[in-house]
Amino acid sequence: MPPRKIQDIIVERPGSKIPQRISPRSTVVFRNAGAPPRPAASGREERGRPSSSVRFPLGPVSSPRKRWRGMLWGAAVVAVVVLVFAFSSFFEKATLKIVPKQKTASFDSIIVARKGVAEEGKNVLPFELMELSGSESREVRAAAVLHVERRAFGTVVVYNDFDAASQRLIKNTRFESAGGKIYRIHESIVVPGQKVVDGKTVPGSAEAIVYAEEPGAPYNAGLTDFTVPGFKGTPRFAKFYARSKTEISGGFSGEEKTVSDEEFRAVTAELAKETENTLLARAHAEKPADFVLFDDAVFVVMDEAIPPKAEAKNEVATIVVNAKLYGLLFKKEMIENFLAEKLSYAEEGAHITVENLEEMDFKIIDKVNYSPADDAQFSFTLKGKPQLVWEFDAENLREKLRDVGKSELAAVLVGFPSVMRAEVTFRPFWKRSFPGDTEDIVIESVLEEGE
Image 1 (spheres, rainbow, N blue to C red):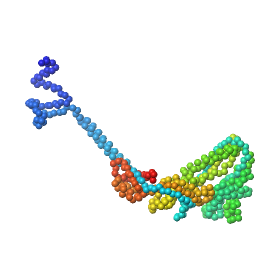
Image 2: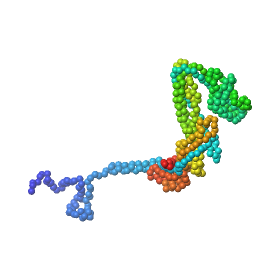
Image 3: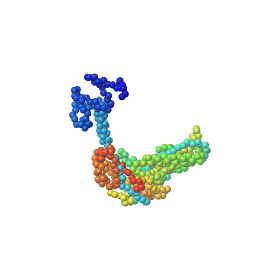
Image 4: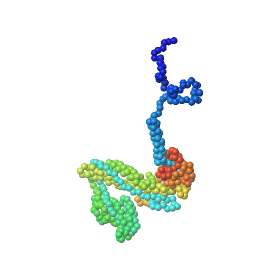
């Protein structure tokens, strides 16, 4: 037997308390003082027998402070969840995607367009006339000495003191000055009839630019009066007249330092193209949203460009191009109803739109002989594959969907025959009914490709 080491010897003395070595996972048993030692027993017997000892597991013990902190964290999590639900309900929204009834058809027809109101029962569509004016200019070096001829021009006010009816004066109408010189208008004008102002009858009036019949300085004139030779021998002759608003000037014939013919033609062509592009952009931007302007329904008329003379100081000449745009506008709804009726798709109480209306082929018949300023009627061809879409009353549908459950959506849509299919998305995701506020109900119309 090996000798015992000093550290292995434990001396037990009466009344002394000898500490025991306890592992972290062991159990400390406290017994009442004076209780007899208990004999060893099996685990089963030990569990079944009452004991005066109390056992405490040794290990991490939760302090009251830690338990209070855990309760606070739990309350915070619950509060966050409640807030999420509250805010989600506050920002609730329903998005309804509608696929309306739609059809692609074929159309090819000759149609009459008439300025003003359409005639029922006839193959006639009304149109309105848009007029825009514009100009472009450029300074060029005047390096050529040429024989130049320019016509004098100026602005006059034309009066109609004949009756209350308007009078159209066609392009090239003559005006004779008090000095016997003849001037003409390059664009037709409409002179309003008489009107009553403060109990007095006053003539109607309209402005126009008159150009000398021949070039040269003799046609330059100060303020003067004009007659209309075309009315001579009729009662209108004395009742239609004009008075200068500006002097008649610019007439010249002779040699002058100016721009060469070749450069003048080149610059004029460039300015004409710039003016046309500017006017076209304005026409599409300024036309009413409920009207359509087809490409072939646009006329751009350029005024006669006059070779400029050089300024005496810097020998620079300014070339100016003036132009006017005429646009024939059709109201979209009128054409859509016309197409729906001609294609036999018109339904009482339902409006059919044409999504690709401006993409259809529109051509004016005999366009070269049509004058938008003078003629009130023309014929055109319209062909293509119009995409017809049946409209539905979105506002009425929103009202019908207020507080309606998702399961009742199909029943509501029965009252909207223009709707083919629908798909709804709710926010937050757990919602199963439409909001009570119509502003929170978003309706989107979705077109099917390839129809």
